[in-house]
Structures are given as structure tokens and as C-alpha cells.
Amino acid sequence: GAVVSQHPSRVICKSGTSVKIECRSLDFQATTMFWYRQFPKQSLMLMATSNEGSKATYEQGVEKDKFLINHASLTLSTLTVTSAHPEDSSFYICSARSTTTDYEQYFGPGTRLTVT
Amino acid sequence: GQNIDQPTEMTATEGAIVQINCTYQTSGFNGLFWYQQHAGEAPTFLSYNVLDGLEEKGRFSSFLSRSKGYSYLLLKELQMKDSASYLCAVIRGDYKLSFGAGTTVTVRA
Image: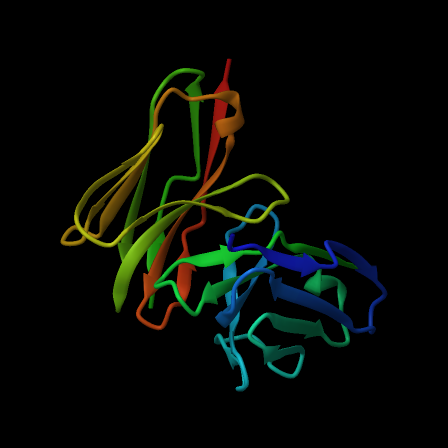
């Protein structure tokens, strides 16, 4: 149980285009989903918190107009990187908190984004 | 703000024991997680401590002292597959996780 999927697992896009990453909780309902970014040899940095049916809250320094987050249902959150640039190339990971568990978060497998 | 420190790298021999320390200064502490992460993969859950003391789970144990802002992850009977990055993360009351930079453990034969 408690499986989180991400799609796509890898994506290469050209500079200036937009990319959408999906995060799904497969066997549970997720009250809250979190989006992280991880650069090579660095730790995970929280980008934003996504709650179903409401606007995402972004961490300091993360541009909300560049990283669009939609949490349309209790099992799906999407992150759209708009007008991507090479410096946006990173490993994007989502996690989901179940409506029934306390503090544990379940992580998706991650999406490797490369912007050329 | 959150300040979480852990060593960058550790090396140990197969079959040995390694202890990874983590110190933290944080507001709104609601527990500490340890995760294992292999390169290019997402973190996998190892342990969660919210009360002081030692939690043992097979070859892995985790300890927490809230008064000292200190935790450690103990890996016993090291195996080659344990070579990975180990992340210490603190969770706040708003369910946000703050991660340390990670400790890369290399297990040698």
C-alpha cells in the first residue's frame, strides 16, 4: 500500500517550452502533496505544498508563476514548469500525505527533467 | 528556520557498523525521519522518531534526543547494497519536511 507514482520519469525539453509532471497516489487519498527539487549531490529542497481544492503555498524563493501547481483531486497533483530554462534541469520529486496517517509522507519515484 | 547538519561522507567495511549523526535546530519540531536514497531514485523511509530514545528495526536503529537536538542512524552488519545517501529530515507541525544535505555511505568489501 501507499504507492505514489510520477509521470514522466524522464523528460527532455527545449528551452522556452513548458513541461507538466503528474503525481498520483495510487491506493490512498492524499490530503496534501509536496513538491521537491533536488540538484546533483544536493539534498531535497521543498518547493511547494499542494492541498486538494486550494491554492498551493510556495517556499521562499520559488516563483509561483513559473512552477504552476494544481491539486484537482485527492489522488492527483500536477507541477508545470513554464518557460523552462537549462537551470531548471533537476530531479523533481513529489510526496503525498495520506488522509489517515499522521506525519509520514510517501515519495514518488521522481522525474528527471533536462532542459536543452 | 531550519538548520540540519550531518556528515557529508562515511566509509565502512562490509559487516561493520556505521553511525550517522544528525544535529538540528528547528522551530515547531514534530519528529525526525531517516531516509535512504540511491542515486537517481526517490528517498525510501527508514525510521521516524518523535519521542526520545532508540527505535530498532532489524539492522537499522535510530535514536533521538529532543533536548539535545540530536539523532543518529545506526546501520549494523553492513552490506554492499547499503551504499547510498542517508537523509536526516525534520518535520514541523505543518507537515513540511526539511532535509539535511545527506550522508553518502560507501561500503567496501
